[in-house]
Length: 280
Image (tube, rainbow, N blue to C red; front, side, top):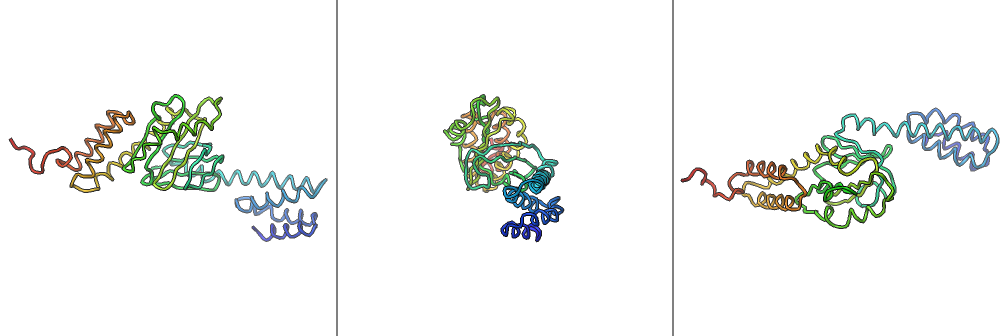
């Protein structure tokens, strides 16, 4: 807080309310362009308002409205800057539950999917989740087809798509909502369940199609990097077959991922011994 705000708090504690209002007029200039000062002005003016009346109370009302406008303006900056280059933006997602990430239950956060990471934004607070850390991204809700699209990595966390996690989360949502979509995000050390009524599961899944493509490409790369021996790739191919069987990926996606995998690791995955290609 600025010296003016600290001075105003001291004056309020001493019962010098008129002097405190005069000090807040001096502090007002710091609120614009500084989110911390704007919040401080709002806090002090709110505390002072309840102790005053008449013109002094009117001045406090002005400070409160001014501070709220400054906070709204400054809080919108991170969202607008990040959204300018984003693949997709999902605003106003309510937190249903989870752990390991800053969002708390009943808070509203915005999701900004950039080229390399997911940004969780609430006002001036930003939490970043690199795509390389994501082991599961599930979109579900009424009308969704078997979870609306599920990405599972080598960690094998498929329970989010088929278990009761999303179903239980949906029980917390108002049944009268026109669109009801739950997004489940998992990393190796965190889970986050969010709800949005702005888009249906199918619409959101299509909007995030580029993100799912990036996740699949990263997973294929990780599997290939396990080495030319083929053990990791064979395991990955088995998992891909399982996802196809459960209809969590399409036949086209399976064929493409399989082709990429075979091209990378060669005969060890196809079942042919090294050097056998072309033998009669």
